[in-house]
View (cartoon, one colour):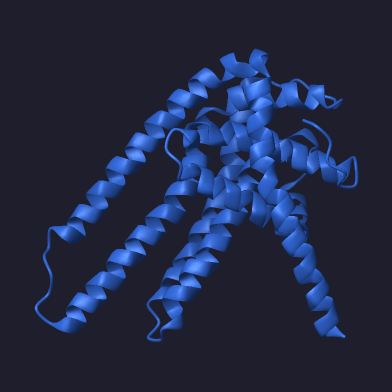
Length: 259
């Protein structure tokens, strides 16, 4: 029965969500415990701080455009303006978090690759050395592909938001958050995929087949970005957590072990 199959998949995704959510915390503890890797975080922390300030400034500028216009004279005009204002805030949260991860991964790629290599070696993996510029190039290419698909999906969801039925805003908030969480998780899992030589199609297939874990992992990343100061350390924690998540699946049939 398709109902029974759907129920099993839902329960599996729910368990995966809970497990995936825990990997950001595991990554944070591992980063804190690895004192030798702390020097690698200096530049990424500065980059994250700069991106955060730039995002806050851009958000304030975008919102000031609405606040400076004043309220329309008609009630329906005020309602439309309020709906547009909410849409801008939600879009800024979704696009801002993904852009934060995208740009941070590119600029800090050499340092994150070195940190990832330390984690892989500590877990008994094999690391193939490569020039730092190649790592940056690969990061730009793969992130650009994901960012392109992410923007297309978000534009479609924004169209859904303005549908003349009440479910539009609810559907946009729900689906928009799910898509953002999924792509955030994929962004940091890409480092693990790089170490195992997966193609873009293989990466996409792996993420779709483990969507419950990705939603949980991406949700933890998104919420971490919303916490001041803590959000500066989230990218490194997400990177280490992503390596552990992939390793627990591929090498140990999801039997979590210490990072």
